[in-house]
Amino acid sequence: MLKIDGLRVNYGGIEAVKGIDFEVPEGKIVTLIGANGAGKSTILRTIAGLVKPAAGRIRLQAEDITALSPDRIVSKGITLVPEGRHVFPDLTVLENLKIGAYLRTDDLNHDLEWVYSLFPRLKERSWQAAGTLSGGEQQMLAVGRALMSRPKLMMMDEPSLGLAPLVVKDIFSIIRKINEQGVTILLIEQNANMALHTADLAYVLETGRLTLSGTGEELLKNEAVKKAYLG
Amino acid sequence: MIKEKKSKTGAFVALVCVVLLLILTIVLENVLDPTKNIMLFTVLKKGAVYALVASSMNLLNGFTGLFSLGQAGFMLLGAYTYAILTIPAASRDSVYYLYGGSAIHFSLPELFGGGVFGLILGVLIALILAGLVAAGVAWLIGLPVLRLKSDYLAIATLGFAEIIRAVFQWDKLGPVTNGANALKSFPTFSSFNIPGGLRLSTFVAFLLAAVCIAVILLLINSSYGRAFKSIREDEIAAEAMGINLAKHKRLSFCISSFFAGVGGGMFAMFANQAQAKTFTTAMTYEILLIVVIGGIGSISGSCIASFLYLATSEWWLRFLDSEITLQNGFKAPLLRNGFRMVVFSIVIMIVVLFFRRGIMGDKELPDLFWKRKAKAAGKEGAK
Image (cartoon, rainbow over all chains, first blue to last red):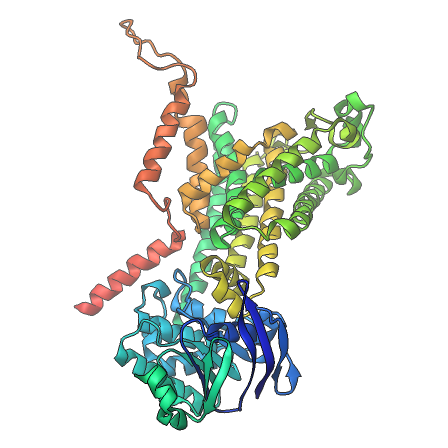
């Protein structure tokens, strides 16, 4: 579905991504794992169009989407759940969700019901300012908001960041549920254990280069991965 | 779904309130003698103009989060456009006497055949053109300026307003702008008073302001308004949601300037003249003060604050400016010319101290009622 060839990105004067190739097959959960500063977030931000690549191609279903503007990329069906949630704190939960569907002109009720069925908590709090939600609820809102654009591919940047282990478990089970309903997912995580258990396909990223790839199961058993990320 | 119904009845109630208010202005102006209540009607008319300009500034500063201080500049553009287009052809020679007549020889109200119909249509079109000129200039200067953020944007727009003010006083432009002299003789609010009949000047000011503010409110409650608010809250997330930042910032800037331009035209109608030197930075600060006191992100706050601000600064504290000597010869201390502004500054400081987020915060007037109702419903539910 998404194919990336020879992607290089300069970020803040350094080369953060040094030529990587990978693929996200349709209907799968794919994860990129790696330490801080490995270039994971940069890759997602580049795919979303927030950062321009120095070289390389990004293709969505054979269509070249390299360096399109972010709004064009969203309308093509790729959406990003940014790191640290970034909900709009003074807007209500419902307004946050509606902004997720900003580029759509059709009826939203069906998708609102879908998001509310995935996250019943959001329905209870739909008139509350998003800033007053707990961390876990904000993450749910960020995911729900991204789903409102009805994406083919949802990219998630560290969904477990700053959340309690139980909440993280919830979030990951919902990620699986969303995936079962036909949304392809590209996930980056520092919580390698959780990510590898969830993912169909995983890549390991080290200082801007891909060093390992395989199914989640394979990487969980890999000695090098165990030593570096699973402890 | 229930909420939608509620907001519909809410809009209906608001409409009824506005209509009542408009009727009240007609009644007030015809029952009270305007020559004996000059201050009241000055405050009402200027308040309506300032309410519109403050709302337009709030759209930009409060809802989109772009800190711009160019409002007086856009008002100036609007005021001049309105005045130049509506001065009657017969009066042009006397207005432009220093420059041997005007470069423009037509007048919109006369172009539409004069009379009541020509006056209404001419003034309306001149006001719309005033807005369009301001919006067009906003679009142009927005291209470079909107790349800046917060304080830098404020300084750039402030500089723009000063440049505009200087340019309009330039002698070479005399045949169009009348140089540093005032433009006058154009239709004002008082032109709408029916001779020997109803006095409608305050009503016209309120009607124009109400229509424009209603448009601003509709915009804020549309999906564009939501996009503006999301840019204010978090640019990164807004961009990731597919909101084109540059386009929406420009849109907000142009619309805000459009209404500032219309407000400028109305200010000229209120003041009976248009002169570049009145549109100073101090005027922008006055409007900024109204926005902050009313509540950043509240249109009803801006409206309430503009009337309170003008009433306090121009009317209610007037008595402090003249010396008062009691019958027993006791002279009240401190009262002399200028003391009013001292007291006024203290009042503002007190207001800002006690209402940290302005009078209304980011709530609108109807929110206060809904909240109370919701609370009452909650209590009943608990029982």
